[in-house]
Amino acid sequence: MAIKIDTYTNSILKNVKHYPDEPVYLISVSGPDIYYETKINDIIIKQSYTNNEGSFPIKLFSNVNNVFNQDGKQKVSFTLYPAVNKTFQNNDWVEISIESRNQFGDDKTIFTFEPPMKDDGETSEHIGLESYSGEFEFEASIPYEKQINWVDSENLQNRKNIEKEVVEAYKEVMRLYAEGDLDNLLELYKPIFQDEAQSVYATKEKKTRLYKLNWERLHPFFYKSKPNLVKDYELKFYADGKLVTLEKKKDSSRAYNESALSIIYDKDFDKFPDGLSRKNRDVVMFNEGTTPKMEMELFLLFHKPRGSKTLKLATDIFRKEKLLNGKD
Image: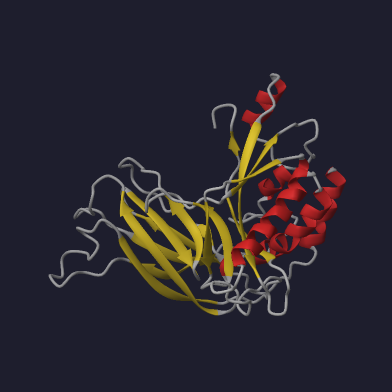
């Protein structure tokens, strides 16, 4: 298995192209006691519904290259909520930053957004509101072409029987997991991994970079898993109707967007391939006689390329695995 994974990884990395300038674009949202959701090109990038309890906010940057389909303008949209009070207070400042970092570690600020002032010239326009939404654009220079490009895909919002098509696509993915069909699962995800690897100009050699391939996604592939699709789902569209997914119905406007599909699996380290990261907590638990039972949310987005008769997997929003039978 370790040889198979190494071969698979190498087959992706050998196709990554390199350029004199390799910019990775990053976003951060900072401010005291706020919840937020951010999108780029109408695709969820980051959500935070955890209160930092008044601690000083730290800038945490997330890579966003993978939602670019072409050079030029990229649209950021956001919704912010106060985490403590019902409305934003006078000391509730907000800053959204876009930066780029190249392969040499050189950082550059591309754009910084702060809410504009009201007519009084002293109060930000979000103060006093229960939620605050807005958008802005920034320019990105991307030297590569993606394998999966949904810019010219069909707009699915008005397509007849689209829900049936989406459910069928989900059932096929669920079948592969339930049967433990590792080869076809890896083949299904390969274009996504390839685009992710290219978006960060990944190499096999370890370098002092902020970005690296996240192979934690592979963990459910190694086990005969139990897929679960909730019955209470809703059809959701992203990328201006080009991408479609199934999400759990939300109880409130602040609820986290969650996929309707999750995978439950026993993390048996006797079957776990060498070379993949292992959390000490999970290994200790396994060595003490309890196999960690894990759940990973599969937030899958599908598109229909022009001329295609079926939906194709376009991208995913990665969520870390959760421990179900212990303290996470």
